[in-house]
Length: 463
Image (cartoon, rainbow, N blue to C red; front, top):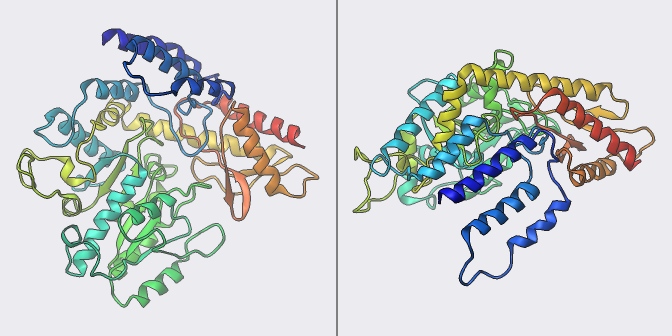
C-alpha cells in the first residue's frame, strides 16, 4: 500500500507545479478517457499498473479546476493545508457518524463549526452541520425551516410528513438559486413552490410585492429566502430589510450565502451581509471561497435544536440515539455514515486564520476590479453589471456584429474548446454574457490579464 501511495505522491509534485501554466482543459488529452473503460476485469490486474493508468489519465485529462485560470461556476482552489488534510481524511478513513464511531472526527468537526461561526461573526450559540455541497446546505437549512413550519401548524413533519398540511409558502427575489429550488424539491415542497418577488429582469427583490404576498397569507407561517451573492453578477438581496419583513410577519429567514457569505470577512464588503445574524439559517460552501476540497458545504442554524428535530434518526438497537452522550452529528444533519470532511476545513482555518482568509478575499476583490477595468477599457467588450464582489459579468460587443447573443454563445463555446482559460456563458437581464468568478487563492494579476487577452483573441478569430 505504501508503494501505491508513493505513486500518488510522486505525481503530485509535477502536477501541482504545472497548475500555473497548464491549460484548464487539454482537449487532445480527452482521448485518453477511453482507456478507463472496457469490460469489468475478471481477475483484476496489478494495482501499481492500475494507479499508474489512473494518474496518467487524470493528470492529463482532468479539468484543472484547482488552477488559477478556472473562472467557470464559482470554484476555489485547495490551499496546501486543506489538500494535505484531505489526504489525511482518506488515510484515516474515519466514520464521523458519532462520538463513539470517532471521537477524533467528532472533536475536529466541533472545532471547525465553532471556527466557522467565529469567522463570519455569528454567536457561539448557533448550531451547524457539515454537509456535501451548497445544495445540501440549503437542504439542511430548509429542512429545519420545514420542521419549524410544521410545528407552527401543530405537526411534527419528521414523524408524520407533509400530507395533512397546506403548501409551505416560500418567497424570494429573482436571485433564488437552482440549488435552493432543488432542496425544496427534495423536501417535498416542489421546486416551483417559490413565489418570486422581483422588480426587474435582473431579479432584484420587490419588497412591496413581498409584503403584499405576506399580508395575503393572513398570519400563516412562511419562509423567506435571501440571497447573498447572486451568481450572475455577485449582487445581494437587502438582507436587513428582508430580516425586518421576517420579524414583522413571523417568517423563517434563510440566507443562501453559498459564496457571498464570505463578504463578511472584509470591512470593504461586510456591509453587503448586514443583518446576517438575524437569519434563522445560512447555507454556504467551503469549496468556493474557503478554498477547501469539494464536499465541504455547511449549514449554520440559529436554534441548534431545529437540526435535531429535522434530522434525528429513528432508534436502532446498535446505534446511539438522541440524548446519548455517544451520539454525534449524524443526528443533526441529513447524512448518517459520513467521512471526516471537517479535517480540510479545520486545517485551512488553523493554518491561515481569520486574517489569512480576509487577505485572500480582499485579493480577489482587487482582481475582480482589475478585470472590470480591463473590460471597460476594451473597445470590443461591454460590462453589464456593477462588481460588488468577485464576479464580473460582461459580453463581447465587437463593432458591426448585429446578433450579440449568438456571437457570445459562439464565444463561450470557443472559450471552453480553446481550454487555456475557463468561463461559461449565462443570461443576464436577457443578454447572453460571460460571468467569470475569481475565488482561487492561486489566481494572480497575470492570470486576469491573460484571460482578457484570450477573450479578445477569440473575438477576433470569430469575426
